[in-house]
Length: 536
Image (tube, rainbow, N blue to C red):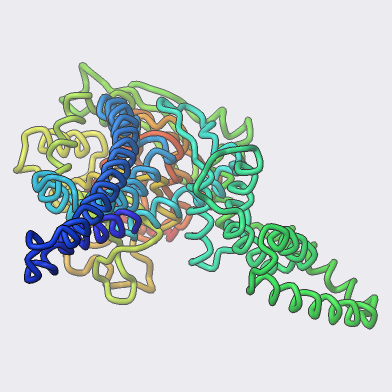
């Protein structure tokens, strides 16, 4: 705005002499002296303009130098850099918000080359949805892995290659995004973190008044009236005339008085009921909590007696000719459901080929809608995927043959190889791979029956997080590059095995690539015969 005013003054000064053109300045020294004053004003305006431009260019230069250093680091190891969720969030924020602010700053004064390039590139920038999604991912990681807000803000995460931190402004932005989602719990956490960093002396454009305004309301929404009043008082110390804060304080005082009266009339029986309800809440362990505990490596553990029944072995695919002389390494991950892992089952070269084939086609992952039976995007699956056919590449064909040889199942009726890459905080919440009885049309369009089994390749190591967990039984399977896990989704009778309900935990640090093959019932009639017992 300041630059516009300067330019307006400059432009007005330039136009001023022409407004006097019809008066014939040269015929009067008196009129000419007015032009001297006009020129003096123009010189002053021009100096102010130059000073402002130099100041602006100095800001842009510092910004460019900072980004030059950052992008040099990032481009050397893009996946490793973006494996840190804070780096991923800040990339979304820079490209969606900060580059736009820079564009506004230089728009009228930069060369056409920059503007045209910016215009072309801008259509490929992340948008508000991307920035919000990255912010939500940070909040999801915070909850799943019990991360302290200060720890996450300082970037002290396990296995990071490129340490990064959140500024007070970044924390404020996270708090605002949580606020727009009516997530007052995370609003409080991140507004408090922003306030803490400002109190510690961090220089920032974030304003304590704004932060306290959001924070006090978020605290009030969670029922902590005393703290909300304390925060509002602090806000009023900074800005005594703040209209909303003054109104809120009067309202809080009114509510506080009403609560005191209500508390006087409360009975012992109500207190007892509240205690009993609290005990019930503690005894109840919902799936979400079990899922998050398993993601952290906590939760149910297999007994020593059961562990003794797990083995590792060389496996020849039930005397498959291709593996008799060169059997593969196999180990048991879990007993019921039986989950086995194949080691060194896909090479680095094969992995790179599959990734290169998939990258141009990666799109938001889809799931089956149980009501329509059609594929749709879902907020509980944060990843992108692509499908590869065997005829496209000898590598994909060879992988399909390998799966058939080692499982003994016919892959001609299987789905194509699905390749998935998880984004910042990427996850897939608990789900079944097979179609349940209440969704009989789940795979009707394929005409190959239900998904009898799942084969899952791990095509990257993950520094932290990213496990495949089975909340019903307490199993956790951790990613290890070059390995694959396999399990049956259906009993030999064709009934679904509900203990195979599983989830992909959020990726805390790193980059997770997987590919999977879903094998179907059709074609397995003689390879895995049906049994008479429903759950055999």
